[in-house]
Image 1 (cartoon, one colour):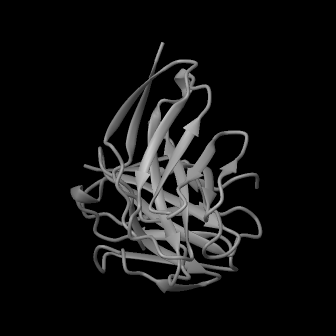
Image 2 (cartoon, rainbow over the protein chains, first blue to last red; image 1 turned 120 degrees about the vertical axis):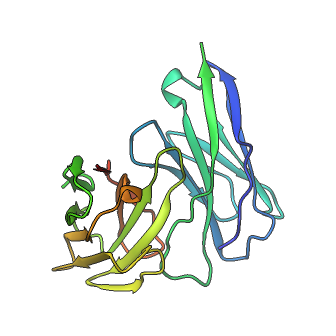
Length: 112
Length: 113
């Protein structure tokens, strides 16, 4: 599975959009980009995933560049409860186990 | 059930004892994963089940660790002769099949004293 690179930490003001970047320059054509988050002491929570088109759900939007080498997770109106570690994971391709390989993620701190 | 259920939520054991951790996946999910997370660290993959078989055991750290799954449902992770470095949160996830969206339980916090 492709390696991802994320900034270790970010701050965001409450009510503003949080834009979390992820680089995955070695992604292959059939690999998906997944985002999870982990709020302190809880299990990881699935947020969103995509292949090449932008995706939106009730939690967030996922913007994938045309060359698929990077993506951005957007939380449109961040709240204090969005403070968490956010993981960008590339998954799929030749692996049929679907195991998720977690990196260190981005710690997002939403401030009042 | 509505989500992945793990038990116990907390377990304190003495060094050298064996422990069993249980995972009840979401009903109908054929794929099941175990991970562990040591304090302040990222998630480390342990083992993947598809049905009752485990085609990927590559993350099990030693032969003291084993896991089984019965009836394509409940899974048990067993750690024999526990060591202090085994202290961690053990997380289970399940998905409809390998490669589909995986949902995690809340984990079992294991403390070896």
